[in-house]
Image (cartoon, rainbow, N blue to C red; front, side, top):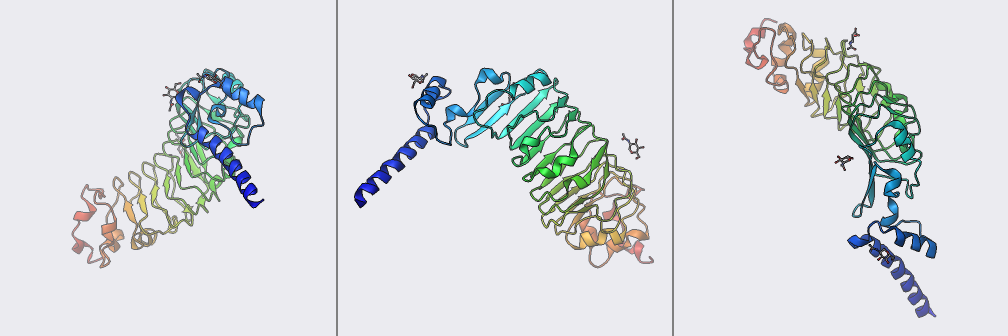
Length: 347
Ligand SMILES: *[C@@H]1O[C@H](CO)[C@@H](O)[C@H](O)[C@H]1NC(C)=O
Ligand SMILES: *[C@@H]1O[C@H](CO)[C@@H](O)[C@H](O)[C@H]1NC(C)=O
Ligand SMILES: *[C@@H]1O[C@H](CO)[C@@H](O)[C@H](O)[C@H]1NC(C)=O
């Protein structure tokens, strides 16, 4: 009796594995053999996992989008770079998609799509949303709602985006990488990112944008790129207070920042703060000492630094000057690192 059960179990296991092996190692002629798929479907009950042939929708139903299935990673990508207008894209997502979970959605070098409409994906989810170098202007509220639980990367750089639904950003619970650099945004509501626990990388640089609010409660943030925006004011206290011990880059280069208040950023060993090319005239001790003492570095070249007694603290016994980049210059053109420390003796 026992033996019989074991034999039955063995047969059950080999059947399942045999089927899986078949799917893992298809011969080239099997790929996209639709007639075979349909025969199997009609023939007997289909298991919950799908064979590689069934993953992608019929090619003609989604043209000019192209679906590709990677056998090794069993991931599907959808490349809609050749789509001609919004209506066409909408129709494509009304096709029959046997599997609704994709890895990547890609549109690049496309100058036809201006608006990504609410609900456009019609329930299809993506892990990576890559739309770059296009004329996209508007991402409507709920355009990406099918990806709230799946999106790990949203790359939207180099488009013409003037409107993005930041209010929705905190819904992307797995979002690790967010890049909306090189667009035409005018306001960035920083508070929208609060509480994104998976977020490691934010790049908003190169937009004519002002930042409203603060970046807080982002416990895994490593890089925040806010260069070449339209930040014209003083950076306030608590501006970047993520609570992340891994924070390694804050870029505020190419803005018109006049000063930074004490307590503006997290204090983390190894943090590089890039203030290159701003309008900072003094390296205020109360602001900068804590970062440099903690092992951080400051890039302050291309600022109108006066280099008076206000920077004497950098030349003290603790040698904090070593944490300021060597290209930092004073208004007279001389390098900070070349100053004779004795000139601060009377400060
Ligand atoms: C497709 O599958 C059918 C049914 O299994 C088979 O008869 C046919 O030879 C296959 N065609 C190709 C190109 O593999
Ligand atoms: C996506 O499609 C476009 C044109 O349809 C093609 O030029 C491009 O190489 C494709 N990209 C990838 C990554 O498959
Ligand atoms: C930049 O900010 C200033 C001051 O807030 C504003 O007057 C100006 O219009 C902004 N420039 C752009 C290009 O948004």
